[in-house]
Length: 219
Ligand code: GRF
Image 1 (cartoon, rainbow, N blue to C red):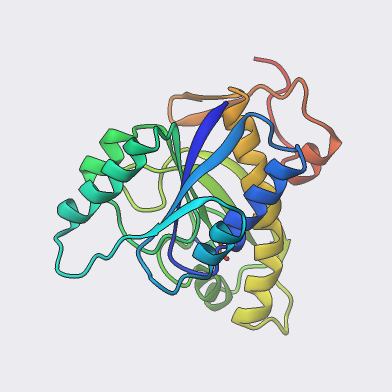
Image 2 (cartoon, rainbow, N blue to C red; image 1 turned 120 degrees about the horizontal axis):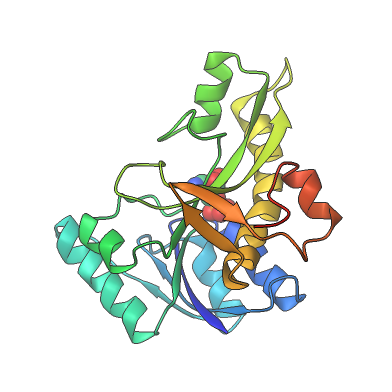
């Protein structure tokens, strides 16, 4: 059983979706042992408390990035976390943090990476006039939104879309692919080879191919 630490800054709907998928048995090999937030009023903290998961607001005020990240590292180590799940965590992590959990940090970004990195990805997609948008779950490396991609979802961009309507369409798929990525990771089905993810998909059901139609059936 792998132990997950989840980092949030806001409403925590991705955290919630992972939690629900653990509860209903879609993700079987993991449990969320701690939730950390850099925002005191993050909605996700309440979700954690309602579900009896230890959750902490860690105040960044007055701290340098390294000092703050050391507090995060200490807490995650105290809870013996195997994987760190970034779920709307709105801070850049230090090299020290990323090295401490090398290849063990996941993030979700609301764009088809490598397009539209950084903030307001959905707005960037609308401004670029692309016809398809989506979300990406990826490993976190030192470079922003750039690590190996594990799973992506694709949605159409409609001509009357606003930033809100597009974000909502993408978010629905985020709630599917993040639990899927966590499932694959914690069933040891993911390998990183030359910066690309190879997925052992022998036991994955049909839903997987709808989300991720091109994958490696055998290694
Ligand atoms: C999501 O859109 C995610 O892709 C981005 O931040 C948002 C977090 O939403 N990184 P929530 O807090 O999980 O509801």
